[in-house]
Image 1 (cartoon, helix red, strand yellow):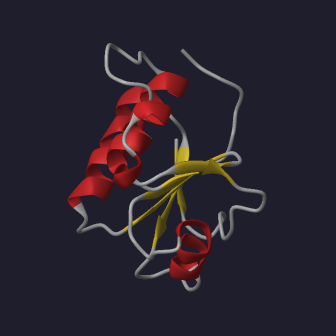
Image 2 (image 1 turned 120 degrees about the vertical axis):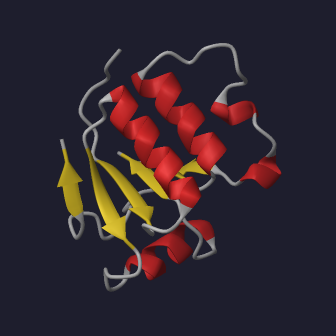
Length: 116
């Protein structure tokens, strides 16, 4: 299942297992995306903090939607680009699990590496 092409950007650190898990789901679903390594990309941490209030990864930007909890991100990806299965909708996950919200100007996308 595919939706209109939105720019998908994953803010991550290579040593972060949660980030690796999100990246594996992106690959499994065949979602073209850009990776921004927050350790090597100047200003990436500031973008995350501006959107989430924290500097934690992973954070995913999908068009004008930002998500910053791996479970919520994965659920969003499955609902948007693949088979959502039987689990709860991303919007129904508990609020302590991070968030998903619309953002007007997501930030420094375009400073990472693209994946097909």
